[in-house]
Amino acid sequence: MEALMVASPSVVDGGGFHCDDAFFEAIDPDDRASAIGTGGPVNLFVGRPDLRELAEAEALRPRLRRWVPTLVDATLPGGQPVLVPADWEKIGTPE
Image (tube, rainbow, N blue to C red; front, side, top):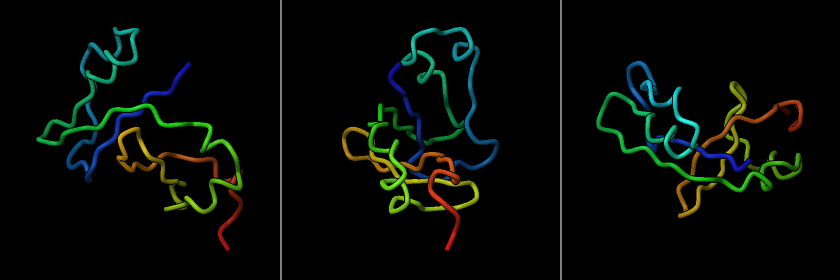
């Protein structure tokens, strides 16, 4: 199954992301993604990142942007950079 990512280009204030009922009822990933909002005037980016580039431990360490929670950078098709969760055990411990 191909991963679908919904990301915000800026900090989401308030209660974060909100999912309406269609998110829980939809089967199609694109329909589920369109049911996600922020409750504010933030345009969300939706895309399918190349998960193969995030699968190898040696590729993750240089992309590390935050330890807690562990986040690495990725790029959505079209060039939009986003942060995605990563397994810190795969990357190693902070130096």
